[in-house]
Length: 110
Length: 115
Image (cartoon, rainbow over all chains, first blue to last red; front, top):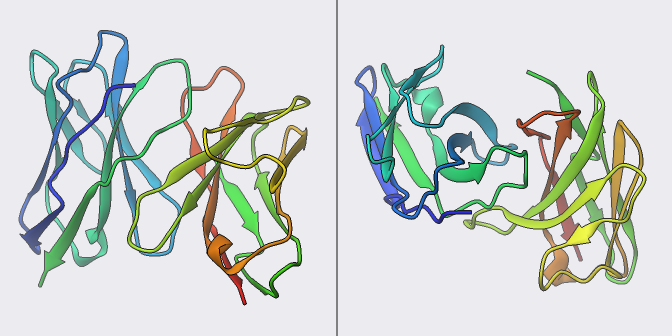
């Protein structure tokens, strides 16, 4: 599975959009981009995933570049409860195990 | 989404004892379960993959005789840490995947402290 690179930490003002980038320059054609988050001392929570088209759900939007070498997770109106570590994972669509990187620690500031 | 539970949520044990952690899929049948370990301020590290009715596949560097995994039913997998030592203290997290599914649903984790 392709390796991902994310910034170590980010801050975002409450109510503003949080944009979390992820580089996955070695992604292959059959690999999806997944985003999970982990609030302190809890299990990871699924956010969103996509292959090549932009995706949106009730939690977030996922923007994948045309060459698929990078993506951005957007939390449109960040709240204090969105403070967590966000993991970007690239994985084939066959349901194999996830290999987590270091993730981005997002802190939402009042 | 589907619900995965873990029991216990935390456990403290003495060095040299064995500890069993349960992972259950509550509202779906999990053909595959995964076990992860997370040390403080670190990311999740995959330990092993277990398929119902067959032996688990361990990641490189994970001792299969120390971390015994049993996936005897479609709703239950157990991880037994044998002869636990303080360095085994960690946050253990399981995830589960159902029939033909690509999604993984994670449990809430179990905090193990070995004294």
